[in-house]
Image (cartoon, rainbow, N blue to C red):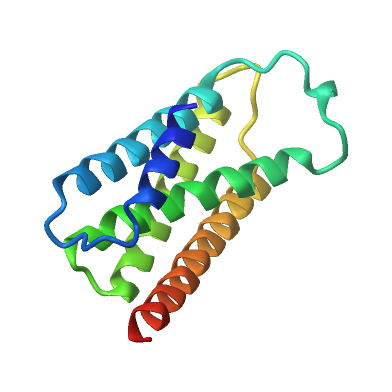
Length: 148
């Protein structure tokens, strides 16, 4: 719920000059922190009924979508630091990779009701790359809109 609120607020102020916007910075930083905490909690809580999945591979799709959002939020936050787009993408994918890898290792090592999987990590990285691609597309559309 909080992430949805932060995303809506982010979109409402997206067209404004963000170079000196404190509110933009705090909203985006809170969104990244909130989503990271949510990913950690959802990854370490015991899973009780994997039979609730509607289709095979739903777990991988959830990993993909979760890290797509994490990468997109990270890119949007880094945008406020005037970092180049290539560095933004690298940092965002690296952050998501490290977060995902650590959570998979924790699941495999310490949580008996969960098991870390290489395919989960692959879905995380693929989602992060797609999240960065969406960010780049959004930047291209925004720059074309401002040129007109």
